[in-house]
Image (cartoon, rainbow, N blue to C red):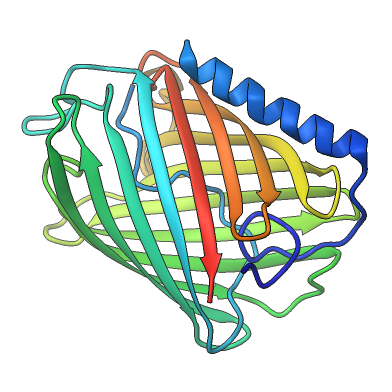
Length: 271
């Protein structure tokens, strides 16, 4: 059962549910499903980090699911796995160390277009969120991930990501931005930078809809060249379903370097 009555997993808020907002949320969910029936590889997790933390001494599990319906069939580098028709399944286990720190572990898995399943490695995660008013106002924090991943999903198997988290919550709106710095730790390598953001409207205590944007900006010392990098916009639904939290979205690539259509959904469970 979720710790808190507001999605996504572990997020806080209040409000009341109305028939109209429930209907709107159902309509968006149906739209996402129908649209999916109809290019860099989708990562193992597609989410914008906010101030959600599991309670101290409690465990949780998020199950990340991503599928590229339409994307590139060409490897991005020698030995890379082309993203089209690849389904990625990534369980994320986490533990609340205290009121500000959460520890996590990702186990990366995938099923290729031909049907073969792969284990693609693991990542350790450390997340810190500074004390703040959980109901309204600004929040900030950081997330650090250290990974050992297969060459088919990462050109640099041993990698480090530093993520800055900043956001603002009002009675109805949630705005958040993540600045992601990545580099290989196996050998000297430059840092790359990605900027992700989320804007969500709360429909009720259980539902919110919004947009998430994921934008590669390139090497830190040579930012730009946006037309040659992945830029993807997702329409998303967050829901508290009682037994689980859901974050679901359909993404449309905005450049030739992006996957054209990607479905993602995260199911969160708290123990």
